[in-house]
Image (cartoon, rainbow, N blue to C red):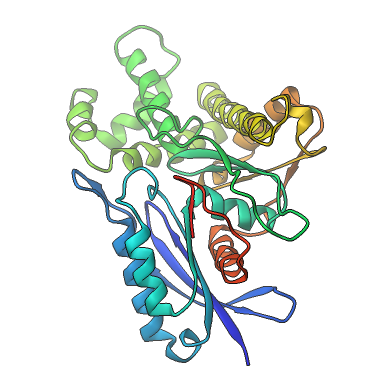
Length: 338
């Protein structure tokens, strides 16, 4: 008889649930998916946990027979650590509904599991925000230790260095420098931003009063990429700067992982060579950002291997569900719940 796991991926622009079949070797095959809404953040916090519950309910209604054969549920979600209430009660309700173990994690963990297939290394996720996460991989028993080490992911006000909102904000700053007559380097950026947002005097009211301003900022990254492709040197420099910032976070995550594992804190304490995967929607901005990331990572540590991601966060969430079913996860405060 077939067994299944659910993988749930919840982000700022949308959410997905996947029904994945588990074969005798522990390999996963996604057989069906459904979509749902993205996370909304307001004065009361995030609705991420209610989205998770609704996706599980939808999965039960849509896939009634395989739902009865679930062995685990994995949930990867943005904002679950810092913008939502304690997830434990909701996860217990989901476990009761699914009659299976449930694990939830910040979205960087499921991105890591999807991109590196459970192996050790660093994954940097560049979307609206930016976060890097490192893990040494499973131990000899196949257990993932509670030593996931993240850098950044501080949101568009304090960090998310190299992410879409960061890139949009930096671009608009340069555009306003040109508008103010400080320098003329951002002329193309100013023209593009004025075409989209209107006169600069209206920008503060559009951004400062908006709940979803990070997404609005990140949307301008599309224009930056287009200007770079047309040969604009300032836009090209911004994309390279975004890649370099993200690479610094990736290498910092590896160093932090080394310290938590009892090493000296030098990168040599991490596995050699160091595998790094770069993922997330922003990498579609083009080769300039990716090459900026690669060049800076290699400059900081010569034995880096930049790998193509094996899979996305949805298969990573399904992998989290499989590991939960096998009892091979260990909880980590503000990172992973089992």
